[in-house]
Length: 352
Length: 283
Ligand SMILES: Nc1ncnc2c1ncn2[C@@H]1O[C@H](COP(=O)(O)OP(=O)(O)OP(=O)(O)O)[C@@H](O)[C@H]1O
Ligand SMILES: [Mg+2]
Image (cartoon, rainbow over all chains, first blue to last red; front, top):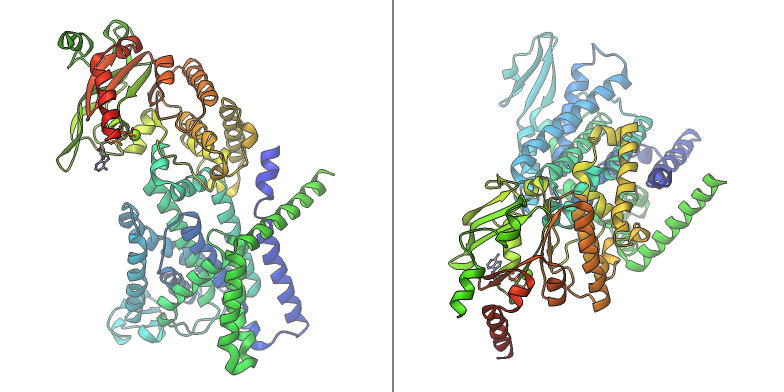
């Protein structure tokens, strides 16, 4: 029984933070206290939090570096946009269409993860960083010249221009090269985003606290010892990487279906680095830190709009403060102590 | 006179360490003409050995003799450039470290290699990895099978830690253990993989005489309880002479003597190798 309660106690904090975040913003929004610019940021915040969690699975749990996670987000975003638009007529229910789009986004991003991961993760060394960096750029450029349309006959693809797809009169262009995905129906909602985020947390937590998660972390801590202990290194690195890619793909679909247009340029190297910044600031391997860092640093620029000229200065100061707090030994020790106290409190309640 | 004694002790190319005793014991490990070169340097050459199924064998020799390299060859951390390794009669050519472990060789490391950020219990559970039966979907959905297997792994981990009275440290991060306990944890983790042959690379290094004494008893206990073969590298001669049933002495990558502890102790070549190396150290 001790194991069961111990295992189930872990990671509760993250759910609590997400639900509290949801309630606060939902109340603000219902009571009309949420500025329109901020309410427009809610879904992107959720998407970036998921991105940070996904990347932290690679960087913090698996100990590999990915510099192209925006690429997986991009694959998810455009797959989601194509699927959602193509299914507009056949699946009128927005929520159902969103779910299907997210699943497809995750699957396609996972496939890209497999394609990259299988050759690269066999090698020992920091090859993943350089290959994912290239992947992010290649995907962006590929999407920049990809045209996708749908008509009565189904999906049409082209790599030259929209006309060469020869769509029928009733056909619509979904993906228009550098102009990106056009005419998307906004079907993402804050609530559905939060549910996706909770599912992502659930998946990561349960994966980490399992034989698979232990194997992944063992490889991170000592590859040679892991091999000598009978762990298949390539396999478990791949599990972590592909899971992460899938989660990033789901975030991408959620993100894209919050806008009427999305351009490939949105998911460039800067976005990959921004997500990495969330992970590093929140503390490598610290999921709670990733949630907070991604949320705070996405909201902040919006909140700072009123400061105009001082915006970047305040942003920089907050960055430094977050870094000092999350990566400082003493501060971390305090956090650990606080967390222990909280969980001990919970334990007592459960016992009594 | 020296020559005569050598031929009696080292019966190359016979692989058995002590022919009289090993004939009736099935060999769990056999290495034949094993060797490796690092860019011309022959780190290990013509290494022949056979280890009985429940034997405690010692591998000794001066610093840099090639002892750890032999462990690295047996576990395929290095691929041998010569010879072959038979594990329970099965050729391990083409296998990697992971596969060799699954086939039954587990080891500890001279420079401790624990999973630092994991707890003591988790380190042991990584060792149990291939004996925990559920897959990714079961762990994500937390099926009854997951709970059952995790509970089983938890009990087993504590049981194994109990060999060294370490069960009370289960929740401590491995990196924060004292040095001696880290060495013991490596042994427990290796045992968790259910090996047929356990390789211990200087298990008593850094331990005080009392700890070493306890370790000796525990190594014997492990062999008796688990019925496995153990091969150990050790500089502590009390330990080696006290528990090893057979000993091979290595110098400059070559076996210079094999035999029982008393035979080794009285072998002039062995004495010379050790004295020689001591002279070098002084110089
Ligand atoms: N990867 C390698 N590349 C080149 N040379 C190596 C390599 N590994 C070991 N050696 C060399 O092989 C020889 C034997 O080293 P090894 O570590 O096996 O010695 P050892 O008997 O374990 O010594 P010690 O008692 O100090 O642990 C040394 O000369 C060492 O420098
Ligand atoms: Mg050595």
